[in-house]
Amino acid sequence: MKLMIGSNEKTLATYNSHASEYVAGTTHVVFGAIRDWINEALAGLPLDAALLEIGSAIGRDAAYIHEQGYEVECTDASTAFVQHLRRLGFEAKLFNVLNDAFTAKYDLIIANAVLLHFDRQEFAEALRKSSRALKPNGRFAFSLKRGDGEEWSDEKLNAPRFFCYWQPEDLAPLLSRARFSSWAINEVATERAHAEWLYIVARA
Image (cartoon, rainbow, N blue to C red; front, side):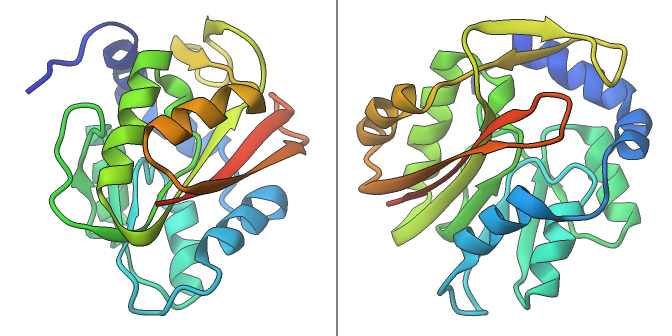
């Protein structure tokens, strides 16, 4: 098993030590671009579809998916967030997509504001592993911050988190290499601290 080192380990340490601040500082309502993206990811799926969320964090997106009639398996790589999710009543489990193996096949895997913490090599590996964990015609929905380069930021939590930024044209070769057959990339200007986002739904 690969050991977590460097940027990912340090970012997870920040989430583990500042989970309460993240919960308090994050909106608990799904609206706007995020709602549209989740709805696009769910469109046409039967209510008994197998769904997995990577990085469930505060449980907001999972709760919205439940409201649409679906069951979703909640996971997070942060022990603090897993504990928070369990206190909310979710059957959450600890899962790090970089280190851990998927144990089932899914119709939809969703990861909101998770893969943006991975460097470019880690991102490509997460795409590859997620693609292999999808059923035929399954979907992988994920979001990224639009931009160039990468950086460490203390914004929001007053503690370091690693961010890697992406342009839409950078994603197509990696999605193809990970054996996704098609994808939709929506470029969205939001009112969030980092305004430019990419919302992707890729199909196996």
